[in-house]
Length: 78
Image (cartoon, rainbow, N blue to C red):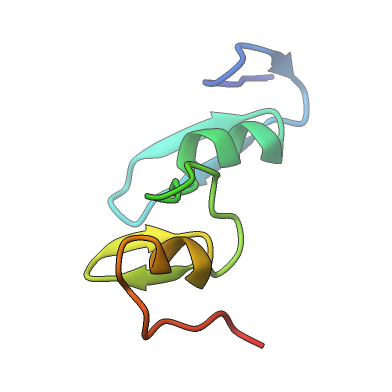
C-alpha cells in the first residue's frame, strides 16, 4: 500500500510518477499529482494541466495571461 506524499492517504491503488531526473513521487490521485507536479501559471497562479503557452521560459495557462506581461505574439491553440 502506497502513501500519498501530498495528502498522506494510504491507498491500495496509489501510483508512482518518476521524473526524467529519476526522482519518484507517490500519489493516491491525479488531483494530488497535479497539485505537486503541474507548473503554475506565472500570471494567475492556476495549475497548467493542458498545453499552456511558454514565453522566454515562463509558463502561462493561456495566451491571455501571457499578454498581461507583454507577450503579445503568443496564441492559444485552436
